[in-house]
Image 1 (spheres, one colour):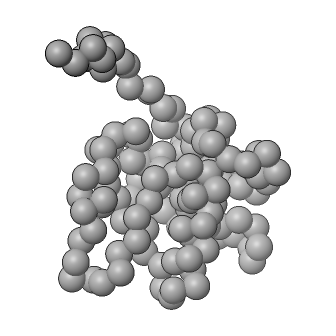
Image 2: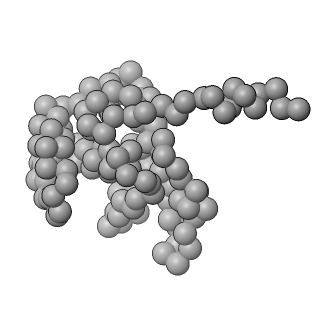
Length: 128
């Protein structure tokens, strides 16, 4: 008999907010990474108000935190709808930067090493 069976049945999944700034506050980030820059909050707020539109382009300066902002947008959408989703990077350096940043904030990700092979972790990602 599994003594934890009832406990597992009654456990409630944590309902995460879909608003990206509120969602960021639920991330398990390191203390020195605990705030969003003003431009990031501005872009995330504007994006959230238009989140159901198709093909929104966000323009941010170099070094302003585009990768973190993009990850929060995608994380917000995966909380809203059933995951998984794909974040495409143009080169391996940006892939590593994105993986490292996602790890800093506890955003669940996996890496595709080959285009023809879908990783099992990607196939099995579920609602957070």
